[in-house]
Length: 110
Image (cartoon, rainbow, N blue to C red; front, side, top):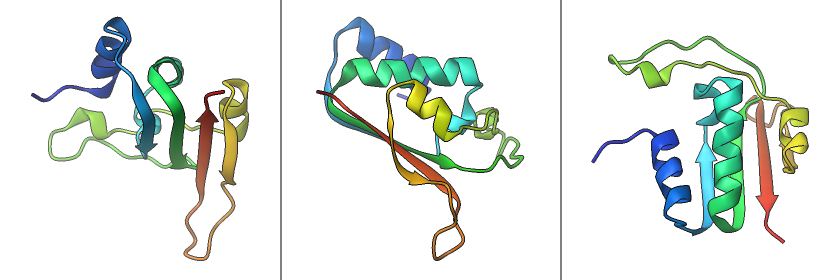
């Protein structure tokens, strides 16, 4: 079955499906900001222990790829966006040794 992550998470919340950890790398920027916030909130609900998110620290255009409209970049995320949602910051977007500028945020369930 092929399903987009928003629909999948909605089903998980509806059926009270739980995961110990959710790891989303280079995903959240493919949602507009409002829907992305919903995705993060659903992840917080269905995780038993932790959610870890990574996203580019700078916005860059990316369109559909191979006919897949879900490949488009629709939003840019900041440290403030994550902290307002209760996430901690693991990596703040400064370039690493390879020049990658990524924000890595975590939500640890208490």
